[in-house]
Length: 160
Image (cartoon, rainbow, N blue to C red; front, side, top):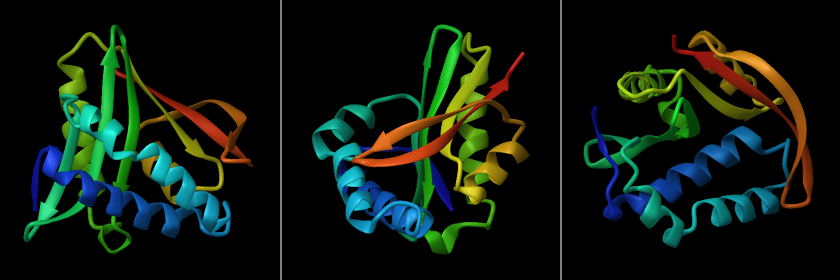
C-alpha cells in the first residue's frame, strides 16, 4: 500500500471512494437519494480541484487503485479533519490508522494545538475509530444535511 499526496487525476476515484463509503456507512441513517446528493455536492469536481492542492490531502492506493483518502487543514492553532474515507472492503485493515497517523504527524509540525472533527452520532465505526485515536467529545449538535436532520458529535484531540 502506498500513501501519497492527492492529485488532480485522482478526483474521480476520490469521488468513487466517498460515494461507496457514504452508502456503506449511512444507508439506514440517511435516505440513499440524500446521500447521493450530499456526496455529489461535497465532492464537486471544481471544489476538489482546489482541495487536492491542500498540503494535508492524501490518498492510499494499492495496485494503482485508490482505496482511501484523508483531508485535513490547519489554521493558526486549530487543525480540522475534514474527511477520512475508505472503500468498505478496505476498512478494518489498519489503512485508516496509517492515513490518520500521517496527517497527525504533519499537523504536529505546525502550530496546531488540537484537531477537531465532526462525525454523525449514529456512525459507531467512525466514533470508535476516533476515540481509539484519543479524541474526546466536545459537544453534540443537530445539523441538517440535504433536508435530513441528523445528530453529530464534535470531537477534539489536544496535541500539547
